Length: 54
Image 1 (cartoon, one colour):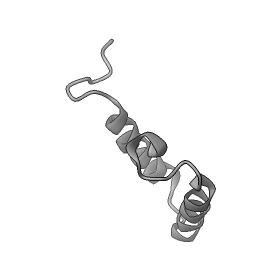
Image 2 (cartoon, rainbow, N blue to C red; image 1 turned 30 degrees about the vertical axis):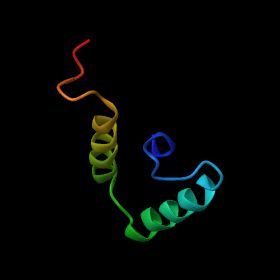
Image 3 (cartoon, rainbow, N blue to C red; image 1 turned 180 degrees about the vertical axis):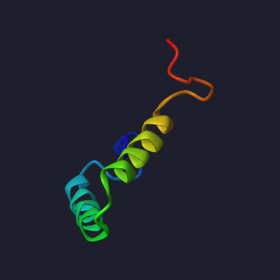
């Protein structure tokens, strides 16, 4: 998703991913907070108006 969106470049994904990992480690988010972030990111992948009803 981050590659497709242009957020990270194809040649350097590991640099961004390692920095994101460090950020999450420092922040020490709880499981439910991570689930909120995962849900938010998953919603970006769905076409607008799609609520998961296939």
